[in-house]
Image 1 (tube, rainbow, N blue to C red):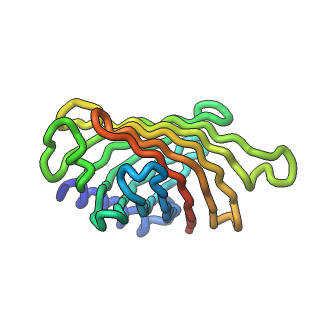
Image 2: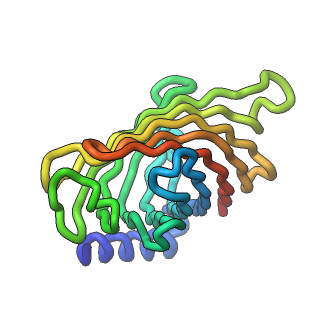
Image 3: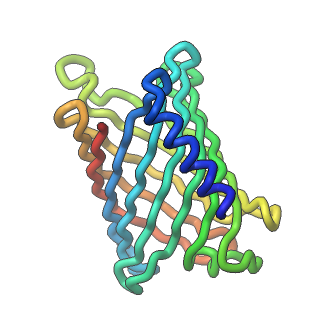
Length: 201
């Protein structure tokens, strides 16, 4: 964790001190309503420092994410890491991240990783405009799936799928709503309705 934190701090300083490598910031806040009452409602906050590389149709980022269970009032999942996402075709995207993970979420795994661990997450998504004319760039529909693999134990830890509608309110303000299914591999599943607010700087 100390090594990863140090790398993030050094990269952040380099990026902000050198305008040629300047990045954008995205702050996403999401409320997940547990529709089956399996786990409890979730508050999720993710902050990303990212840069678009237009010549390769890629985005790279470092990020931190905090997930709080509003039923148990504990930080269920805390992560920090790096990710890259590439547009494969016009509407299809693939991404990969590596992150440090801690929190109560580790208790749901079939192995015992301890208080903290490392994992990778593979992400696949398809994003389509909902309307063909005036709202083409404002209202988007996104289908996505994420699969997390624990590097410490060499086993899958979490699989999530969902659908989300995102509305571009003012270019830097995005509203979203949707549905998400969380499969804690070899443990219980949860279905959520979601509402989100994302800000870009």
